[in-house]
Length: 450
Image (cartoon, rainbow, N blue to C red; front, side, top):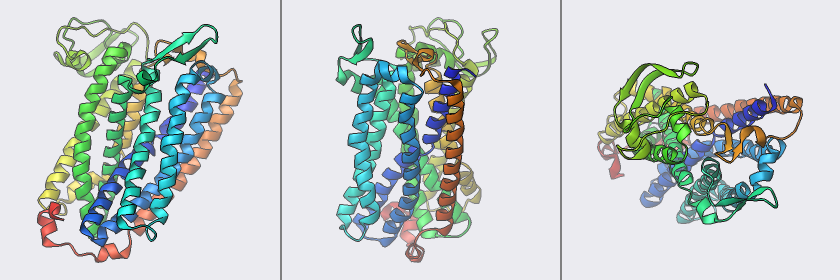
């Protein structure tokens, strides 16, 4: 592997590992705010204990996310020095705002969340939890504004005197349509991840006959929140497809294995086996007009075929697996919502097993989504502006091998610690007072009554 491939591999591994923690942080933060709102409104202590239990898991995940995220920014200087020099004035601004506005907000209120239970009133602590959730979402916003500019560079120009890109319209950078569609799509995926996480652990408790009051209430909240989030992911993902069709035509062509420009309206390939060597797709199953509607919002505009050589096969299947999982989430949450609304969650053990075994699926969908977003942009670091091979630092290949090995060892150790803490916390379970809470007949027949 050459320097460019190794540098891409290192950043890709660290970024995808970091993103194992980000979506769960996004989802759990909002779920905590919902649960604590119920506690403040009802005064029932079981809801407070639910917030404390899920908050403990949130804290473990949050700490791991911080530890793995910091190293990524240093790589812009160590492995991508020319990239940092060429677009640092633009790319660095959202990252700096994320640190000052969002990360400091999170860091402040995460401490108040854990240590303020006996020092703040119920309403004050709820405000802290809501601000913590706001901070996590603002962090995602500014990171995705920076990433969205890489996908669709706007509001900037090249300065011949400094030989660098400079901002000309910061509002255009902030309100970049690609960045905004990526933000809402990504945070909705994070909400799905948090809801699946809560449902899976609650299902495990119900299957083992433990912490029944907490598990039933948690599954009810997660099912309703997750259903709304899963529907949002599909709708907002469609918007991401449209913005990509407008601004990143080669990404759409690679995702669809569209080797040649089709007459409008283009069809969508549901199934096929792309062969990049012969530039054909075998065993195709197509839906007429569908791709034209997704990518152009019309039936009279063509979708361009491939004129570069991105990695078609992995992009093709990554996108389809991600979409299939999106519809699986809607079905799962819809079924859970129906069972919860009718008080039948405990009656169908096979469904509880599906919830438990489905725990990894939102992470699979999220990682595939990021691969489609970043892999589909190749061979560009900044789409249409800066090629990837020009972006790397001039360092010996041996240095990158050494740092890559160090990251693998360090992150593997963190993974072991994270799994150990998560499993131990789940096995230990919530506070005993939650187990002693009664489940009223009204909750079993109509959970919304509580």
